[in-house]
Length: 481
Image (cartoon, rainbow, N blue to C red; front, side):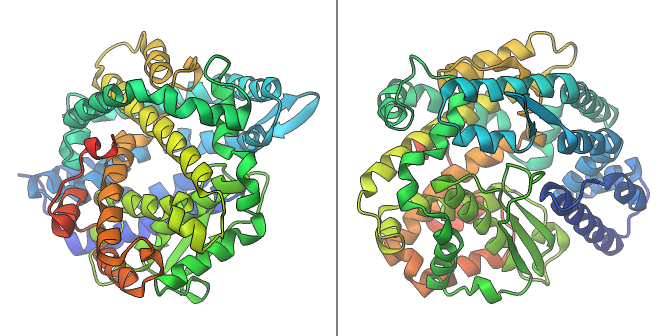
């Protein structure tokens, strides 16, 4: 038998820790402070992440808290490297044409660069900096996390993550492989016209460096002006009965900063009372998609019932919050939303581009999951995994994929699986809303009431349970095909 654990006290301290960690994440990655002081936070709450706590929670079968404790223990063991990674990345600069460019700002510049050769130069310089300055630390973090997993008694990270998440990751991998096969013949015929429209060439000249410009889609900018970015979200949420501008505790951080992370994020510092939505503006529809995606997270967290335990408010199956994020993101290419909110004439062009982009992303994440399944099942040398990463991603997207990002492209603990499940969940959520409230569901307060009802339960229910309650289905990747 293991020592007893005071669960109410553990929950209280876990919530304090999560709030401090998310606040530090927000301040650093929004570019507001250079420091990333997670080491002190982990030390203040070291008692949350002991082997005894893990053993007790495992014996009690408290899965979300056990997952939190294990992830936190690994985070504590690698906190110094993670803090140093963030500091290096924030300070890192690359040289392009005798001009210094912040490492984090480079993807934004690359997405807006019209010259494919200069895009390639930026991508190459960024990969070089990654390989020299960040990959050694990323490797240390990966190896230490793998070692802690073995010390905790799991034979591999894959087995650990399957037990902690309750997700059949290998089964999802089979679905991902089937989805890649099902979309294989359609991929180039669907994507090629959009590549040619946005870049001026197709797969015969496409490089990975061009993808950010393809997603950016400058030719669509006239329909997505910067001065309507925030107001379009405010108006859309108002249609659902949500006044985001006076919503307590919600902060929309859309201002540019040189050290702001190019990857948009939502930081739920205190759920439901203090939520930050952060995006670095790139321009055009990309910004709208990022803002609406993070707004899905923000509104989900901001409407959670405050009386729920910490594991239902902060933890659980993130496929759920990602599903709500994709639901709002999808509005930015929805013909009815484009007509009613943005008054777009050529809605078909936007829809075709969005479909091509989504297919690229879905296939990329299917390949990512297959790669991560192989990587995290390794128990010895990782020899050959760089090449395997490049092969799988390159085959799925049909470009030469650099090996350099084989560790930087990893989201922790199989988060790629959450994205894939969320895309499937969103497909069902959207169909249910359209069926009940019509194509303009986003302007129906009753649809907002339904969503608020789902949001109130936080992540008490996983994606499978949520969907079973909504329409009796289950999130399966075949829904995306």
